[in-house]
Length: 286
Ligand SMILES: [Zn+2]
Image (cartoon, rainbow, N blue to C red; front, top):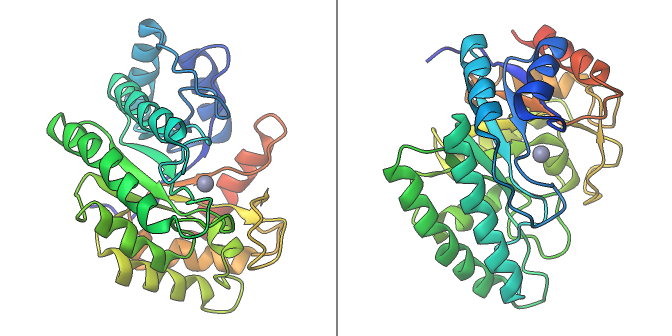
């Protein structure tokens, strides 16, 4: 496997998947692309436009740009509200179907939260019941992986610190269809001191010790507007926030990130913020 870490951005799609996203990929210099396939703050499950799907998949393949989907931010498999768990499961099934249609490698979803005190054990059982059928199906069909992303913490998160991924993966018997997406802003918010010298390296070491060698599949590189441990999830441009550029140099040099795509989800006025962040991370690449 190549050790090159392709860098790209979360990419807008309004106006058509191919029509909107491909020019954005070119304008930002993205070598990897992440998109929503539904409203990020809604439950609607729109059918794709087959013509746009094909143009987008072909355009990304031609450019050698791997594709990832971010599922709706409302997804919470740990919710004590049954209707939320049901809609979350359907949303992930939809994202996997859409992922197969556009050749996506992975579908990212947030680890979720138990919301109520004392609900964590039940919540992880729900995670198991919802995910196992989806994981079996997508693995059998050669479809995208599901990628769990630890959250910023607070609200009885099921996984925010990287050590919490151990019980989460255990809940699905460490199924090979479930990978991990590591978000730097979330880890910082959850209390990992990435800004200390060696802090990013130590956090990634702990991640690998917890999840194993081949489980990390995607990185969200985001600086933060807030302090370490704040549990707040406000992304900032790379090197402009409280995490700072040296931590991202450690990220881009860590052996665990070799060959793993890196996506920025940072503020961007049109495409300029993303283009700058992609250039910064590429410059930090050893
Ligand atoms: Zn993220």
